[in-house]
Length: 87
Image (cartoon, rainbow, N blue to C red; front, side, top):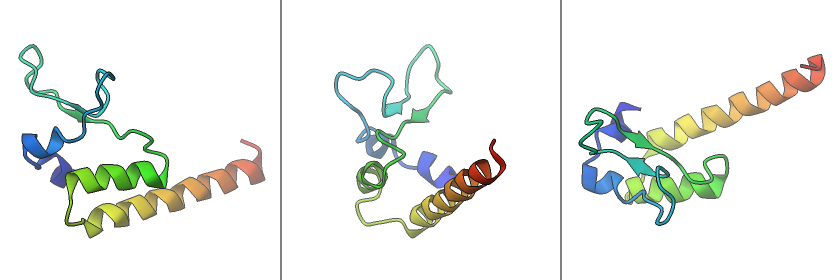
């Protein structure tokens, strides 16, 4: 999502987990200047997504939640198909 990577470096650096290298925000490294990543701790749980969203957008972001809800629908459809067709 372009909107996420357009956030300021200061905002993205709120998503850092002490003692866990390469988890959370990874960027601004001299040896790989074009690389940037944002990991979400517990990204498969509602609580993990809420914590991440609160760090990035303290005033909220409706589009982010819309995309999250679409991903949940896809997850449940995939689960259903796998169970029905024994994949």
